[in-house]
Image: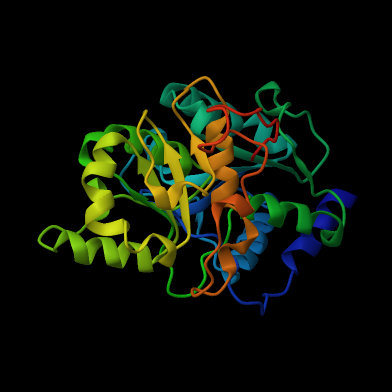
Length: 331
């Protein structure tokens, strides 16, 4: 009996948690928070069962072989399908895993061709050689007692995503004109990427056919934490006057300018993100604004965007269009 096997037996004995769900919401198109890739025999399998039991008790959705794979499909097709449905891949590293399962997973990942969209959490459960593919990822050393590694693992599972309070379905609603749909669609894909995991709502995809536009906009605003106003000439000429001009201060907004235009008077003293220059770091500023802690404030609380966009890529009528860039990094 080795120390490693004893620790894995201790992990098996982890009690079921009695804490409320703290799992982040799953964005559109994702069914699981994590796919567990591991050696399918004991003691590795028992370790995975214990860990996923506690995660699922906390509200996480875990994909585990063979429980959650499709019968009748090849292993290769199962892996490819699962990788597109999961936010993260937990690789449970042991000598047996490296020798048997890792090469198969690595091959399928490469064939999928979407490496930049995958988020890995390597977990070391016994001393072994970490594959070169994973050497530059932060890994969890779970060869010791649970209290020394569980919190770090749990934080990586949570990611840097603000929780959605009751009655909220989206982190952000994109208010825009139809001519800017492609621009919004591209930004939504970046935000909903597993690296960011922001749950978005935008009309072209999420509005219910047959409902009136006014009802759809009202519902989207009510069920979203933030409203991103995608400001362009067409937006100000159409949607702005129809839906937002008189109600602007009733919800929490992030104005973002994507083309040259004359801002309405009501926006004169509001700090806006300037996204007209694609070579700047304005996306990081948008991400930071969406993730600010005051997202959990009461629904009746109205805050100005100037509260959370400071000395970044900003635009105000009295300032230069592009301010200094921030070097803040995001998960």
